[in-house]
Length: 407
Image 1 (cartoon, rainbow, N blue to C red):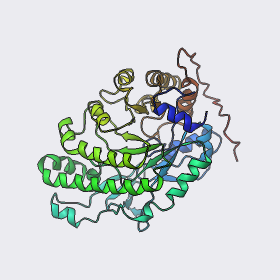
Image 2: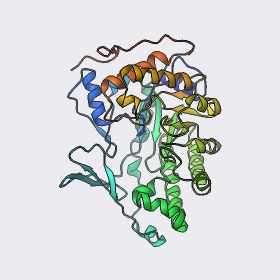
Image 3: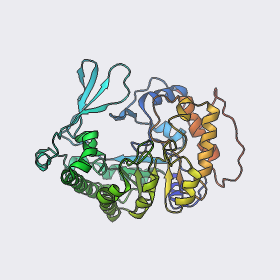
């Protein structure tokens, strides 16, 4: 069965030959640089140059031969950075720093630092005048979309994979103010400066709709999945109340999803970390087809069998493969396998499940465990589910039949 056929069956809540597998098709289902380096070493491919495709999260671009070896069913298409923006790393004492295209400053410790954190924000005051003065990124800049049609058409016509589209200016209606205004400030603005906060959200929504229109005019006919993201949850509770979400954010999410649906038949993928169970009926109502990442360690998200029972007719669950906060980094190989088998057994029956890590594979996950994760997916994710004999992984030899010989 071709990868695209397998994916479309699963997204339509049918059972293909096996569960579709993802790694690297989105900025929230990928692998961090050091974890990828360890994976390459485990595969006998050390020393490769690793391309960083997301500076903040330090995500690695997964090589095509590794994608094929892990039997990944998806390939990404993503908007370009604007032509007039150049990311320049600066040396500032104990930190590396840079400015993003929104004008925010980020830094990473030189010693012991894994990611870049926001620490200077361009919008200082919660006033309408500050929004007018701010230099907004331009969603109409043609350089953002240059070459995407050719790339998407080639992937569609020359490969068997499902195509996943991410529009970088097309999301983060609630999240972006945290990185342009400041986390605490943006949260306070929602309650204390509602006129400013709503004007901010509206400006971001208009920008997102315009960006999606341009992006989908180029690639909409080739996409199978369109990725929309906006974090709504913390570890133990929602980030904002459901009432505030329904009043301020949900109508704007609905407008963006409506714009996506007007230009593509692709399924709408919504990413939100954390404890988001209270929002799931709202997301279904506004047209979300796919929920990611199913953060099983967050409040209300751990009973994946119950999530499947309640919402599996309406949503595809993309992720939830293994507890990435405890089991994947700190468990044994057997524990990784057992946790992964359980999540597959909960979420895969009847289709409507894509195997992926719970968010990105972090730097504290060994290559051995990453291979255990994906081998379990291939062995235990085959339909029909039924009773499948569990096999313990041999940590010294995890064969991947399509992996090329080391150079």
